[in-house]
Figure (cartoon, rainbow, N blue to C red):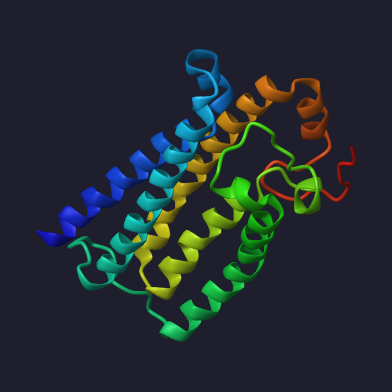
Length: 199
């Protein structure tokens, strides 16, 4: 019973995460309706989305203790150390993009501001390094927990973050127009581009 409740929690938190994160990346659209308060409201949405990610991580850990009664192995047929090596192999590039993106974005990672200056550092090559890093870390957790089910479930984060990134870009076009369109042409979406953007 706990396993099925946990699955329901996992699905609900993923859906709610998508909802609140999309809301958090649409301040320009919201500003047209409610004015300058849109930015602080979007910051609240982003904090809620971050808390939901924390709940999802707890749910992943609970799957280790309460696996679903499915015709799927509870763990991989190899030693946990192989799964740990796979997790490390994914964590290094994903973690680099995530941490570098947070460092270069600074406060903008969590606090939504009207002025947005993410065209330097890693953002000169890739528009969504944090999203790429976050996507990969769901597989890191799944492999560390040695769970085939969680590895499969982690694929759900690809369309979730893809939608979030598309919605964020729509909002940035509203805010910055041709300047953002030009930036978008010269940088990678979720994968770094060899050439980089210069203002």
